[in-house]
Length: 258
Image (cartoon, rainbow, N blue to C red; front, side, top):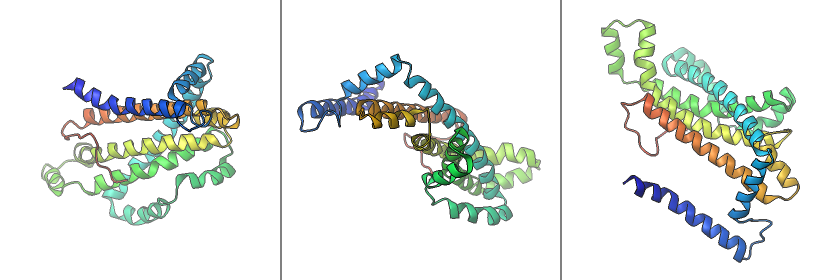
């Protein structure tokens, strides 16, 4: 059964790669503009061998982790507060909802003016982009805690500390983790976009350099790398979610409120 699942996952990718190779080599498409997968793989190997891509991956991942941790921490704390305390909800939520529709990439020019083009600006942009999906999921999770849980806690006379860690946090945790999953995907997008402008390292910077010399094979190699990293991060979050919330029946596609 597991082998069948693996084949079902791999087969579509394999078919797409074969079609891509055939179209690039035999079709009407210019190979310079649309290089075949075999050339992209060779370019990826050369970038790794020449110690070009790995340092870029390291830099991008550091920025992503810092930005996601900062944005996620602020989002979870504020989401729990707005979801459980009505006064805080009335003050903060309208402000967040007013900013939330703003595309995160739209603030990049302003962030560059404020913070320059260094890592601080990039981490801020990543944190800003990842904040909203995590906050929204956390807010909904904290707001929708079943009343019977809270009534039971009152009957047991739990202290505020125990109420938070025994009732509120476990009940909201599946929502928080769903938000982190969406927030991580947003963070990867923000890493890439922030590195396209005013960077001297990172995967986005490597794509910009390759574009300037029309090396589409290197551009695709860097983009594929980013996609693989994103997919591995998503798998890690799903695995962690299953371990932290064993009482929840996990499906292939968890619902979220982004």
